[in-house]
Length: 547
Image 1 (tube, rainbow, N blue to C red):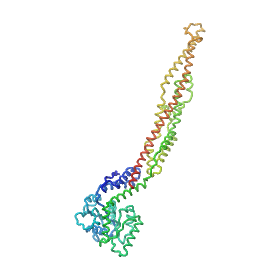
Image 2 (image 1 turned 90 degrees about the vertical axis):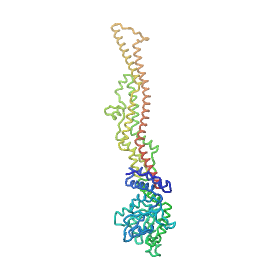
Image 3 (image 1 turned 180 degrees about the vertical axis):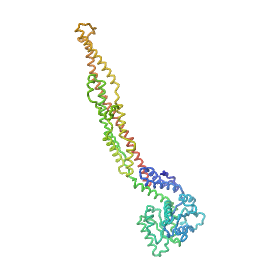
């Protein structure tokens, strides 16, 4: 699929006009809607943007008027009458119009238009060099008149050529005849489906000379009634006789007025753009998107916090920090007894790593957590896209869970990394541990010395005199001091460990919440907001294109 071209500088009225701005809007909507709205809807709009962009760069001094009608309607005779030349074969020489014939008036530039329309040079006639005796109000300078193939031809190629060229016409003139003006073939296939193009449509009832004079106005009124029933109540209906010239000047005046106003080309493009934008809007909608509010964002973060088991992880970090601090700083005897207790992070580590290798203490996401994350993400996508059409709701939902991205795994990785860092021992634990070891060694040595002194006294053996402190020997003082000192250090260390554990838990909580917020922003909120931004561009383009 080719990319739609940005609307160029418009040639109508000498500047960038409303039609060019509307084309820019449609181009923007096509670009934003591609891949989200069905290609069967986007492709025709994209084709139109290229078509309209080319028309805007071509001559703004010419108005393309197409004569369309059935076999025998006198369309070719009317073509000759308007050109004042015998250009189109009529009657037995040309029972059906099998090819398009074009005649141009006025300024240069029509050749480029005709080449753009794909009309061969041998079917192009210029009236520039011919003497024009028309009055001022019937001068057709700037007209490119195209005699289309008959719509009721039995040749399929004629139908295709007519359908192709209708798309290029700035003004459509449907030529009807008194016998078949209500024929369903032209009304059902062309006129009724193009009711939205009433501003660039004229209806000519040809061969009016075959109707008795007193019946003509009634017949014209009947044609207007049929058109009104088909949604074209304001389309002018002009009665003419191409062979006698009745009403031809009135038709010329109508054409001349539109050429001078240069309104038909702009009106046709505007109608085409509005029709394409309307077709896209019927599928893609144009309602305002609610977007993501701060409350929605907080609700998502809290849901992910719960799904990640953050409160349990933080509590586990605090309890585990206390226990590991005690394992390093407690009095060795109580530390040894504590080995028979349960580690608060044991279950978490078992879930995180059955082999116990990681030691990060983070539970791996289970089915409940994953389903909870899915539900939270889906709820956010639904709230952000509430009121949008099905294609855009699906696009927002898909953006929230892009292929190859797993929010749960991302959260798990962030939590693993943060808690693994939090598991590192504090430096002061080692210092306290060394102090406790020194105290234990002193206690053991002092006790051993007291035992040795007791044994020596039993056997009247002489030992070095280590003096005493008051009534107590130095060894007893050292033993008591080591024991009391070690216990006091343990008490102080436990208090310090509690403070440290709470602070570490708070840091872990803040870090994990920041991680969760980052993951939510990068993996969920960001993609949704990018999709909503695309929708906003699409919607703005549609509204501009619709005018």
